[in-house]
Image 1: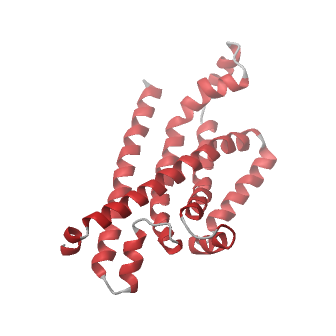
Image 2 (image 1 turned 180 degrees about the vertical axis):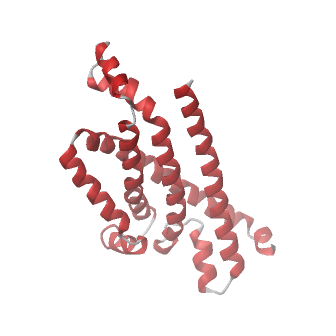
Image 3 (image 1 turned 30 degrees about the horizontal axis):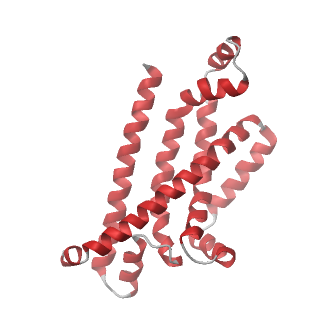
Length: 207
């Protein structure tokens, strides 16, 4: 493609912006989702309310959420980051919860029998055994974040969506194709890397 050769610098810059937004959103979302998932596991009633709220948030159309957030946060990277973190919570929290629930009760009882506190049991026994399931959620959330991050261009957050939006607005199919392919390649690379980590964690657990 002529466009790919003549605009390599622009594409690389937008790819870097997209990657930064994705990694930032994933890191913040994981830091929020882990304690939230632990809380939901430990508190049935309030946990059900939290899950209900997350489900409702996930059903909000992404453009509507962006439009709502820019009213209070303005345009830019930070607003896109908040939106992506919010969307990722439903996937991540549910997988943290599923992972913790998959830990055999016998393992928890053995940890308590060894004199571990609930916190020590969580850190040294439950979370390591739940890790493959949690990583599965991280993988799914990462793909969702990469896809939704393209809409960040609509609120001046940069990223590969800039190519797609510009191409659609100016009848420039090359930009649309290049932007879409770059997003797809990023998603495939992230999925492959996280699948490898997930398999390694599963092997360590069973081996």
